[in-house]
Amino acid sequence: MPSFVIHGDKLLVDHALNQRLADHDATDILESNIHNLTASQLDFGELLHICSSIPFIDHYRIVIIDGLCTLLETKTNTRGPQNNKSKTKVPWTTLSEHIPLMPSSTLLFFKDGILNKNNSLLRVLTKVSETQHVPAPNGVDLSRWIKKSAEEKGAAISPSAIKYLSNLLGNNLESIDHELEKLSLYTNGETIQEPDVQELVSQAQEANIFRTADAIIEGRAQTSFNLIHNLKINGRSASYIIGMVTRQLRQLTLVHSLLETGENHANIGVQLGITSNYAVQKTVEQATKYSSEDIKWKYEQLLQCDLNIKLGKLNADQALETLVFDLSASF
Image 1 (cartoon, helix red, strand yellow):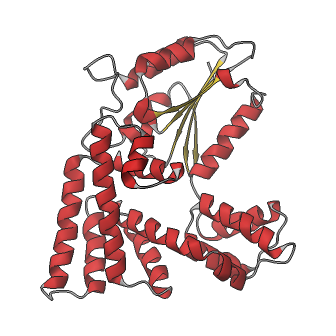
Image 2 (cartoon, rainbow, N blue to C red; image 1 turned 90 degrees about the vertical axis):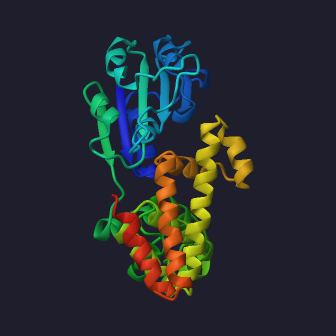
């Protein structure tokens, strides 16, 4: 049976998946033959049953699993989702034995974000699946992508606007694509200029604050410093950024606890006070990367950061810089 692992930037992963469906002439499939499954709620036996079922009327049954490799990629907890009918560990790595036995009418997709090349499930699936890595571009390639994306929306964009937009949003292609959609409508056929980005993408600056907090918590030092620099240019202080990191870490702690009790995404969103399904999904994905010990250790670094400021050992800027380095030390 055709099996695919597509991982990397979310927007590019979705585009690549749609292209694979088009290649198999499987873009117009009955809804009853399409299964979108979330890794954290996945049952091993149910998955095998779905994949082994012959499609109704259509040529294909499409099974899309979101985030399974990511869920297994934790430093201290590699169990992954548990079988609801068993207290034993689910042998997800045995999927390589089951996939070749599934009918050719099943198109099985594993879609994930950025993965470590040593991810245990990725290495196993590569033996029986076509693997496609679609990372977000950087530098000149990112500028070209922005220019091309704007042109696809019927708009031209100036080099200075491209630079400002990439500095503001980094290489978050989904956010950039969304903002270009708004900018193309706003300029109505005129070339998108830097002032247009400054005026229309103000809300994106708020989103950039959360991206910065995520990067710091995840230990991505270089990305963190770039984003911190952009925030400071736009008037955000080091103390404010530290406060946002504290808030985000508290949310991750709550999500981690809720996942352990088996709460679904809808209830997690209610507990967090978040109405956006996308925002809830992103927070859950980040929380599953860490064990309780990981989060506790990060809190200890944050406490030390706060203590250094209160005792006058470091000013807020120095403390933030130290925090970024400390959180990246274990990666």
